[in-house]
Amino acid sequence: MGNQVKIRTAEVLKQKDEISKQHDNLKNTLEELKAAQAQLIQREKMASLGELTAGVAHEIQNPLNFVNNFSEVNVELVDDLYNELKAGNKEEVMDIARNIKENVQKIAYHGGRADAIVKGMLQHSRKNTGQLEAVDINALVDEYFRLSYHGLRAKDKPTSTGQAGFNAIMKTDYDKSIGNINIVPQDMGRVFLNLFNNAFYAVTEKKDLILRQAQYEPAPETQQYEPTVTVSTKFVNSPLGDGGRVQISVKDNGMGIPESALNKIYQPFFTTKPPGHGTGLGLSLSYDIVRAHGGEIKVNTKEGEGTEFIIQLPIL
Image (cartoon, rainbow, N blue to C red; front, side, top):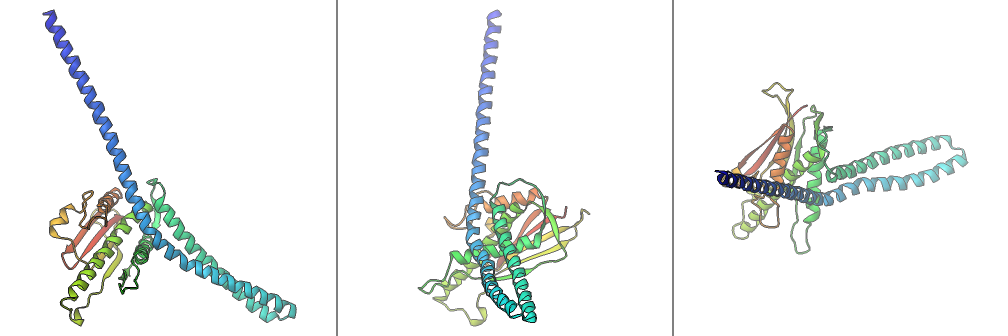
């Protein structure tokens, strides 16, 4: 009897030891998965940052040109002011002083514009604190819309061989009554950038397909394709009585999403793009970000005609 108890005790201790080892292995595996997930998210984050760079370079050049031009003009005006002061022409002095003041105001405006672009990029790249901030949603959407467009324009320029390069019609319709809403701006910025890049990719893909087909069967002039991406915002009432929601729509007239892919588009690593044209993480991360904000993201699409992604965010 004593031997059986000893044997049984030994078996229990052995099982306990095995369970403990399995627990440690599972814990280590979980930590490795979390680390891998963090690396993948960071990789996607840096990829989107790279996509922003070309757009930022274009966007920041415009206000810098204004700053440089008005600064040069002011240098000349100061010389004129000095000469008129010596000549005692009070009216001319006052007129020149007004011009200088106006130019300084323009310099301050465009300098602020450049500063906002740089801060927006730094905000996009910095470590996410997860803090909600009161943000002008229309300004944020428009900023990323233009950065996406100019970034793609910079990457796909016309060539000497006659290739047209990237181009698309941009349409906007913003509800000015919305104002500020509480969001994590760097997170929602990534969502918008992803949706805009996808929309521009879809219309470019369709345009290229039509051009290839036109080599064999030219399309009638009335059926000329104009790649178009339309972005809109509006306030919508909520059935939950929680103060309403902001709806952001990103609509394109591109290739559309195949019906067979619709139930997979938010899965990590799933993409309909060819190798090298996407990580397959963009929509997955966008879905998680929108849900973390208490919002929802939906898609309406028709293969061959276009796609519309609709985001609704609560007004907190």
